[in-house]
Length: 477
Image 1 (cartoon, rainbow, N blue to C red):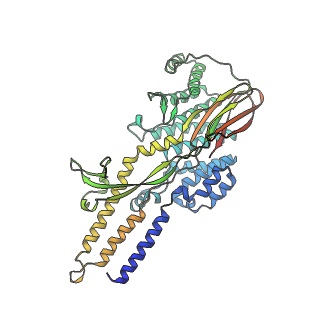
Image 2 (cartoon, rainbow, N blue to C red):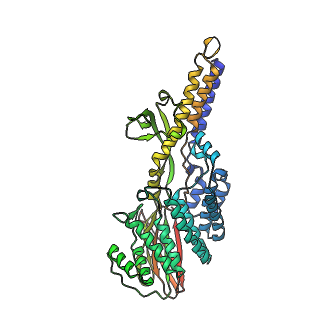
């Protein structure tokens, strides 16, 4: 190789490394302007940041854009447009995102270049916000349709796994929300079924906990009350025993009830984590990836074929994978005070816990795909370099093939990147409370207690109508 060629090669390496360092910025860092405005409560400014963000305008990020746009519009109180965006996101998911070419791009480059398909819990949260939007717009029938679609989403999610007991195959919070919507419409039969289904998700766990959320006492009372109202005596007795509660019917509040959801903190963000693996033959002769410590063993994905893989060329693979980083909420707890009493919130959904555990559940399967893709690239690069030796004129090295091999090596280094995208303005957790209302005006005080000892209060004015009403309050910081 001539000096000129070598200088060009060095310049290419330097430029490549600069591009590599730039491209290592996480998704969170690339939408920092929008994220900051959301966290500080400047929702109108957040929408402006969202609209001018080039990354979110890319077709592969359409689902993310629609979910963020729907959430920002909801926070502003523009419920019509919020559901317009959420409905479009819903339709996108229903039609299917990506395809054969999308999969090829992900294989040749990295998962970040593929169309974003959404986390499973993110899909359930679309139903939550859509249902609230419809209720606030007094479109009860549409809210009920959304409640029914929660059952379809649950079925679709459950069908993905054989080992449902150890997987996020149902969303207990969404089933509870379904029950609340049915109850608000006076459909006590479907309300009981939904509450029962939600409770049974918790009861399958020895400690009645599902992804960081313990079976709420309010949900237990909902199951018992609906069983009683339906006249389901055997079900009432069964759940009294399961909950260790003797049900005592209570008179209905004259002004109805308020279901208050408190959305606290921000969901965790994704960052890139790096791993080093080697490809070896297992005891049964199968190809297996293992880390240096010998604590991880991940099967080679045979869908890529094994005939051309040279083990000598795949002795050190740098793989990347996303990891969640929790965001510490500003507020630690909250209480509600009305004219008669002080009421505590109960946790209904722990998105922080869901994010960490569901990502970990699919680690082996996804890392297998990533490592196999890297092994195929590495083997091809090795073959090119080997072909370059002695294939030139007069038995000299073929600099073109050598350059191609080096280029492939550089490309593999620069293109390897974890997918750090997620719906980042979801709350860290959702808590809820059922508040009895008096007829007419109700002043409800929400006292928020900060982790640093700073308290804030928020007064919510609700007119008691004798029916069930909903309200969600966000502290996204």
